[in-house]
Amino acid sequence: MSIFNSVGETIKRYGSKVKIEHNGDTVNTSAFVEPLRYRNRIYIGGQYHVLGRNRREKYLYIGSANHRLVENKSVIETHGNKYIVKRSETYYIKDFPLYEWAILTPFGERAEDDYESDQGRG
Image (cartoon, rainbow, N blue to C red; front, side, top):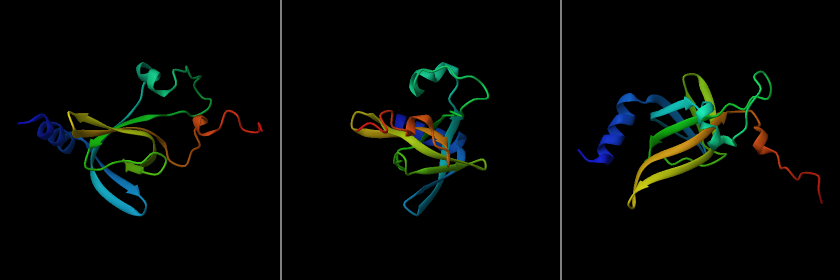
């Protein structure tokens, strides 16, 4: 079995059911969605967070390369929760897409990094 088949079958077999919405289109598929923990802080700004202040939850998405995600537009729904894609990349081996990788935040919340740091300056 090739690595492409292996990765695709693993996502399909062990991933959660997810719904991807983008520009009015909906796709039902499988993917892994899990919280990014402290050890992953380098990917989310490297900041320590005080519990109970400023919700800055981030989630990792790993899914099929057949379903490309668009930053700040694609919405992922799984386990009764909705998330918006904040960053997305396709992982390739040679010139072939293997899987889609993304950082998600809860849908409908404005994350701290959504604000311009130089707002109000002219």
